Image (cartoon, rainbow, N blue to C red; front, side, top):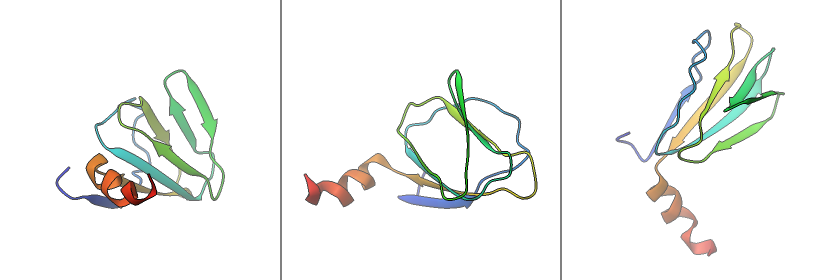
Length: 89
């Protein structure tokens, strides 16, 4: 990831492939129609307005296999997160 923060719409209809990464992922569920957050061996049905914070190293995936779900993904470098919130320490 080259940017400090990257924002995109979650890819729908993607195969469920559990993955992890070295940055922070924040997901905002604008609209959920039978969408799920899958973390290791657990899954949670997503509801409108849910916010999901995935720390680096968390094995996860979002399943949204329909045209009605709208989930916004924010990818944040750990160093950027630390810098922004260092004033709150």
